[in-house]
Structures are given as structure tokens and as C-alpha cells.
Image 1 (spheres, rainbow, N blue to C red):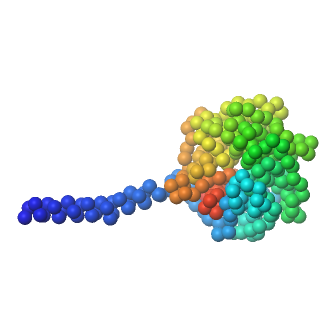
Image 2 (cartoon, helix red, strand yellow):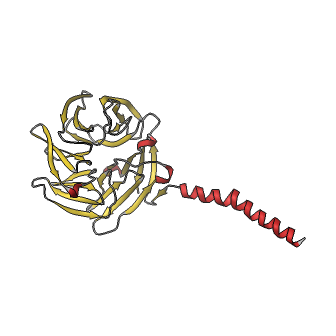
Image 3 (tube, helix red, strand yellow):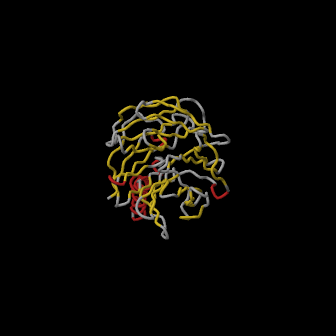
Length: 291
């Protein structure tokens, strides 16, 4: 009788473990990490198609979203730019069409510049149309864009380890080298172009092209944005967003990797303390308030 009772107890323990404990542990593994200093504010509705980058237009108070809508390296003509409101509503899903796999974007005056695999496309914002295409000879996979105060457009090519720029109305290689391997996220500030490369952030003088390491041990970098003095926000594409401060270890703010939700080329609006994350294959843009 005692052996039978003991056997039944063991079966109950096994049953509880299988039906309650194991599923609970599996759920915990899928829970996204959200730092206590940020909270989700909104998520865009259905309609976006592989959103890769977000750009804030401060003059018009709207967001531009680059949609790959296909294979990131394929020239298929399926790509487009969407226009969203600051509360995440879609104003115009296919505002600009006729692109291949658009990624990084930058704004100067009334023009939006977009990387498009092996060319940089210039869009007249007021007219809502493409007005020029700049072939980047020798490029393989153009990615992020940023622009200085004079209107010089810089664009990373992560496959050729090069940074292109539009100079004299032509897109040419500005700098290249082994230290630029995997270069992607760009951020311009006060005469320097900060470049997210494999495992580091480089600081390049835009006059001389000379560069030094500003941050190390970052891992891969997709989007790169300034946060506060000597501090950056960056995403790793897989699903994580970090805060990096000079001389300190990076700090994880957000991780949606376990849910299969990417974090591509992010945007940050300082005056609103709003972090915007394009989720790539999840087909949304999610906004987070930094507290």
C-alpha cells in the first residue's frame, strides 16, 4: 500500500512538472526584456512590409519608413517609403514607390535621401517624388545614411567596408578599410561622423577622414543615434537596443529577440524622448518612451 501511494505521488509530481512548470519556464524564456527606464507607447497598424529604417521629419512632424518588401539585396522594384504620424498612424502607406530595397534615410532641407542597394535616391518631399538617383560605383550593399550641416550625404556600404559620400553631385568612396568591416549605422555631429562597425563605434573627422575608436565591445550595430552627451543608442538588428556611454559597459534597454522581433535602423527624437524601432520581419514600427 505504501509503495502504491509513493508511486502515485511521483506521478503527480511528474504531471505537475510537465503541465505547469515546463510551460511556465518556456513562457519566461519568451518574455521580452524591457528596461524600467522605458515603456512602450504605441505600435503601428498592419500594412508595413519589412520596415528597415525610420526617419523623423522635424519640419513636418511626420515619420518616414523605408519598406524593403522583398529580399534586402534584390533589385525588384518592390520597395517603398511610408509616411506615418507621430502617434503611429499610417498617413500614406506607399508615399514613394519605384525603389528596390530602401534602407537608411537622411533629410536635408526639403529633400529625403535614401540608400537603395547600389544607389542613393533623392526625393523631393514637397512634390512627393524621386528627382535624382546617384549610382554608387563599386558599392555592394548600401545601408545607413546621415548628412552634415552643409548637406554632404554620407552612406555606409557594409559589404565593401566603405563609406560613400555625395560630392560634386556624384556618389564616390570617401573612406574604406579593414576597420570599417561591417559598417552600418551612421550619426553625424559637429564635424565628426560616428560609424557603427563590427564590435565598435568609430569617430571619423569629415575633413581628413582620419578615425579613432570611440566605443568598443558593442557587438554588431544597425541603427546608431545620439542620446545624451557622450552617449549613444544603438540596435543590433536581432532585437536588442542598447545605451552606450564612453568608458562604461553598454546597457541593455530592450530585447525582443526571443519573440523573433527585430530591431533594425532605429530613430530617436530627443525633444519627445521617443525611441522608434522598425521591427523588420515583424512588419511594424514600435515606439518607446524613455522615462
